[in-house]
Length: 88
Image (tube, rainbow, N blue to C red; front, side, top):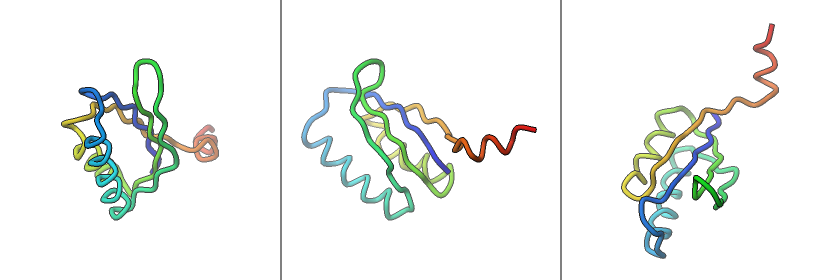
């Protein structure tokens, strides 16, 4: 399953917060998450993450690890090739 997470820092990021997030990403990868892109952005959200996870439970566990430091809105993404097959 593909996911797009729209993330907002709850407070000003610090080097320690970034280091903790990198450790969380290592745990994510061990649980089967594959990151396709992480982008810091300007505007409403601070970061956008694009990743694959085995299922929604693994994706949710990943977001919960960061919930003290980062607010998130996560979207399920369906590749366009698969979505086109759904159109009758």
